[in-house]
Image (cartoon, helix red, strand yellow):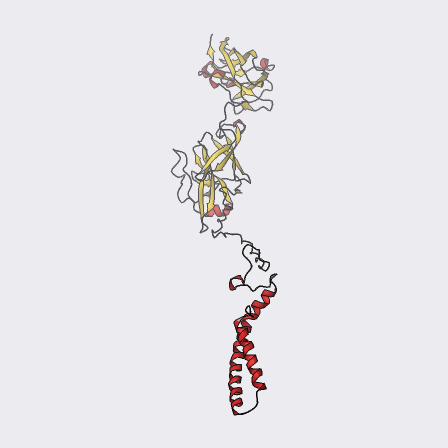
Length: 403
């Protein structure tokens, strides 16, 4: 029993004593002994119960061991280095919540402005070209409708255009404004927007006359926020013909500080529709005077087309200032007609580029009305439209009376 727990030996000893007591004969002494034994048994029973409660889990666990030995208190867990079969599975972690940043910036104001709203507002305009009339105002301007012909800032009839110019998600407005400048008008294509309070404000000038061009005739925009301007090298006025102007489309883009050209031609160059007519001669030979004092005369002129364009018809301007053409020249000048806006009273067959031809005109001249006359050769196309000349000076000669 040396390998039995001491607490168990005490229990067995108590059991033997109790058994012996029951066998002894009864009497007062036996009664006292029995009472003492019962008290001791009660105390031992309590102690044994407590020990049993403490030892039972250890004994039960030892029964599960292969060698039947009891584990020491330090061996209540899994042996070191042996994976535990009772480790709980890890709790799946929740997927990370995306870091969504909600913009608190207010939306850009809507810059779509109607014609009526633009005419009703007061706006600041970019500067007009130097030398413009003082009435072409730029500060706190109330734009006038295009029907105004005096020297004030007007909103032209060119259609307003709308697109997102500055990539802020809102629309802006492009308008063509003008102010009369002599016989023509200064013009500028201007971008307008609204501020946070809804007031109309000026972004910048897109392009204006005096910047390598003399006219702006139309405008367009793209979905990418670009502005397209139709520009011309001439702004027709006075006796100029509208078809003389060369027109181009140029594209402009907002840079954050202003507009810059991003596409299209940057200059006009020589008009490819024009040619160089050279007029020589000019000698006027007069005959004897008639009863009315007028004298017959012949005027010889030579025209050379130096090119590069063929001429459909050649006209002679201001010839009527020398004298009246006779019917003998009907084969040269057809049809007979009054001088047109170019001063041409005679049109004849055309000249190819590089071709030369000499003409002799028969005139009835009043010597008293000859006041240093001159004649000019004029280029006409097949639609009877007259054109300017590449070198204006050499297509004119002074008429010289030689007899």
